[in-house]
Image 1 (tube, rainbow over the protein chains, first blue to last red):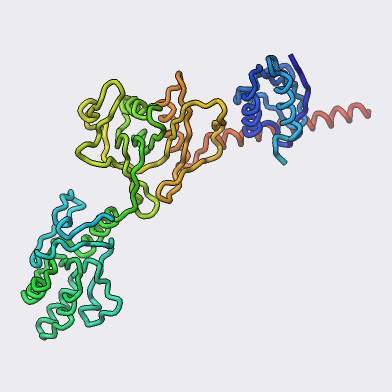
Image 2: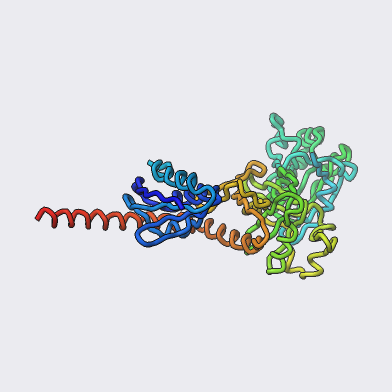
Length: 88
Length: 331
C-alpha cells in the first residue's frame, strides 16, 4: 500500500476532462488505485466516481494504490495533479 | 463513368411524383444518344439565331414561350435557326404541356435523327423532375463494406473488420424493430453536395443477410416488409473494433469525431466489442443521443457544465468560510 497527499491546483477543479485523464492514466496500471477526499474513497478507474467527489480548487486529495505497480501508479496520478491536468 | 441514354429516360419506371410522362414523336434512331450532364437548356436564344456558347450537350426543353416563337418562325417561313439547331448533336428536345411540335420541326428532327419527346407536365415541373433525376444519376458515389440500418429514424452505417459481428448486430437491431437498408455492400451517393444517401447495390438481391451458421436469409420474408427500407440518409458511422486494452476509448463524449465520406463530414463513433457488451443496445442509445445532439442537446457537455458550476460554488463557499474564520481569529 502506497499513499501520497496532493492538492488540486487548477482553478476549475476536477470536472469531466481531468476525470477522464485520471481514469486513462489509472487504467494503465494493474494496481487498485483510490482517491480520497475527506472521508470519501473512490476507485480512480471509475469516471463517474471521480466526478461525484466534487473536488474543487485547493482541495486535498489522498492518492493511494495497492498492487504490483503501486509505486509508479501513485506517482503517475500525483504528477497529473502537479501538472494541473494540463490545464491553464 | 455511367451513361444514360435518351432511351433509358423513356424506359425509367418512375412513380407518381417522379414520373416524366414522356412520349417519343420523332427521331427514334437517335434514342441511343447519351445524356452527359445533369442540366437543361431552354433554347430561346439559339432559336433567335444566337448560337454563341450554345449548351449543345444539354437536353433542350421547349416550353410555351419557345413554342409560340417556333410557331411564329414557321408562319413567317424563317426557319434557318431551327435547322441550325439540328446541326448540333443535342441529346433530345422535350416539349412540355403536351405541345404538338410543327410538322416541319418533326421532319428536320427525323432527318438529323434527334429524338423529339413530348410530356404532359408543365415546364417547371418537368425541369424539377429531370434535374432531380439527373443529379441523382450523376451524383458522386462510393461502395463501402458495412451494414446500413435505420435505428430510431437515424441512418447508422456499421463498419468493422470481417467477423467482428456487424451482421449479427444488425440482426438484433432488426429484431428490436429497426430497419435494414443494406448488408455487406452499401452504395453511398452524395446528393446536392452534403446529403449522403445509402442503399443496397442491387434491388434484386437486396435485403438478404449472411449470418454465420445460418447462411443467407431473407430479412423481408422473415421479419416482414416493415423491417426493410430501400434507401436512407447516413447520419453517423459506427466502427466496431475488437477491444484493445492499449487503446484509449472515449469516456466522456464531449468531443465530436467525424469521418469523411465523399467529402462530407459524418459523426463517427468507435465502439469496442468484447463479450458481455451488448452492441445493439449501445448503437440504439447512440442513435437516440445523436438525435438529441442534432436538436442541440449535448448530454456530455451539459453534464460537464453543471459539474464546473457545482465545483465553482463549492470553491466560493470554501473561500467565504476561510475569510470568516480568519476574521474570528483576529478578534
